[in-house]
Image (cartoon, rainbow, N blue to C red; front, side, top):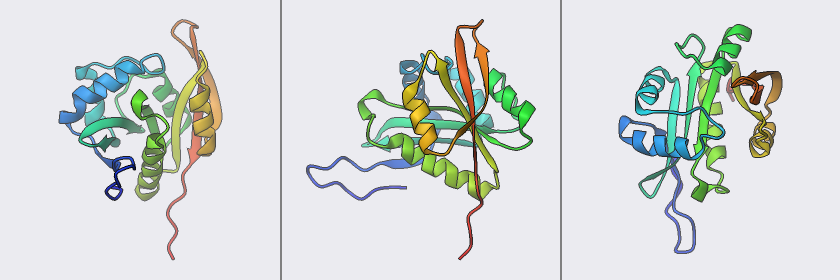
Length: 180
């Protein structure tokens, strides 16, 4: 997905593409900048997640990584308590493990570009449920609002970190593309 070339006063084009190992330094930097909402990520863990990911894409603007989304299917070897919750409750799903948009790029709909793309990917892959979580305590109202706009609904809650963090476990039905 690539937008057309910008006019002098327009924003540069947004390009959504598969993540590569060359993107890892930028992905790690983005993750570190948003670690208050995510679990920490180092190069070794990113390599393992990338190898298992059903979907790992980045948004590139002017040659720089501005956002990324990493998602896993059921039956991955992943120790996340949120991912494991979904494995206990759903036979089939695509789990959004993390989505990050660079602070300087917020408000440009980059998260929406990635979610539109992953929903199309899920539908084309025959996935029936797209799942994720976001923080309730401490609150993450921007994520709650964003996911509500995309039709996610709460399917559970759990406390993490010894009772320091509560998450809302979310799911959204994915419909297969219709033929015309």
